[in-house]
Every structure is written in structure tokens, then in C-alpha cells.
Image 1 (cartoon, rainbow, N blue to C red):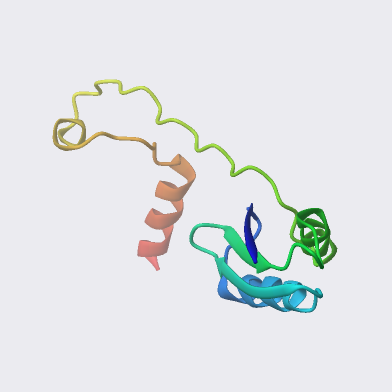
Image 2: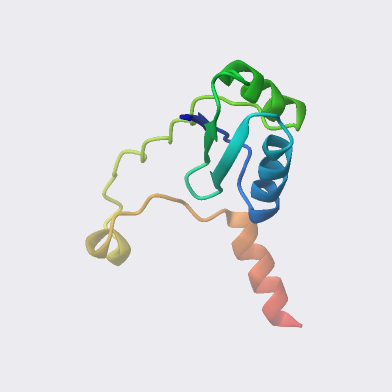
Length: 110
């Protein structure tokens, strides 16, 4: 038996894990499937005399889960000192949308 690992970025919840396991378990030669929505990885133990890794990748693609490299996370924006207490206490990485402030103010009126 051999093992192969695929990264499946679109597998982000438990129901995706179930679908991936079902799709791969139907492939002849697959002995075990361990899928993780947290790590977005699928580890497949298979018999190399019966099935090849490209067939397993095609089974994933056929089930709607393409294999790919994990997406790179964006970097944080550069810090700019706005002299606020928040800046002094902790790094600020987002800016409040003014529309949210207006809406929350209107909500409190009623």
C-alpha cells in the first residue's frame, strides 16, 4: 500500500469531507481515506497495482473538488499611526466602513 496527499481548497466543511470520502471510497484499490476540512488535505491509502494517483485526482475532480495548491494568505496592511488609543494598544488591520456606522446609528434610533 502507498499513500498520496492532495490539497483540496474547496473542502471547507464537514459535508465536503463526507462527499470526498464517499467519492474516493468508490474507487477500486482505495483502502483508506482521511480528509480534513481544517487542513484542506486528503490522504489516501491505495494499492498501486490497482489504481494510480492521477485516477484518484480525477475522481476528486469528478466529484467537484479540484486539487490545487493552497491559496496564499494576503499580508497585513502596513501600520500607520493614527494616534488613536486603539493603535497604541493593538495593531489595527481593518478600517470600519462608514455605512456600517450610519446603519448602526439608525438601528439605535428605533
